Length: 101
Image (cartoon, rainbow, N blue to C red; front, top):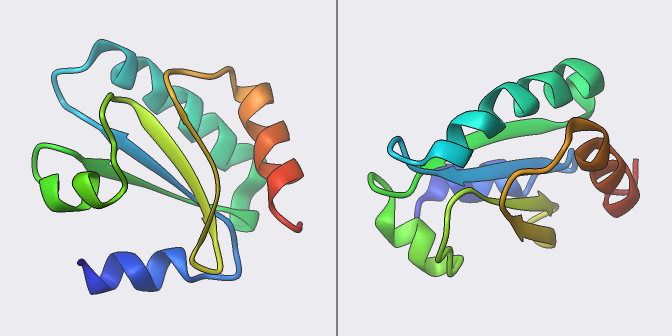
């Protein structure tokens, strides 16, 4: 298991992990949406992208079967996960609802 990944997801700040693949069309659509989410929430959230082709072990640990899959962590706990693309406003609402912000 990747120790730096564990350090990141054990943050008190919510961490949204985007499991993606470079060949995936919906993943490319999600990129700009995630940037807007980060711009809106600023320091209240961390967003990291994990390339499933380069990190197959990590994808396997979290049972990522399809991309994009987003998983929200806080203090090392998985709070929420979903596969597919979401609108910016939906994503922000989920992040704020699920985390204790």
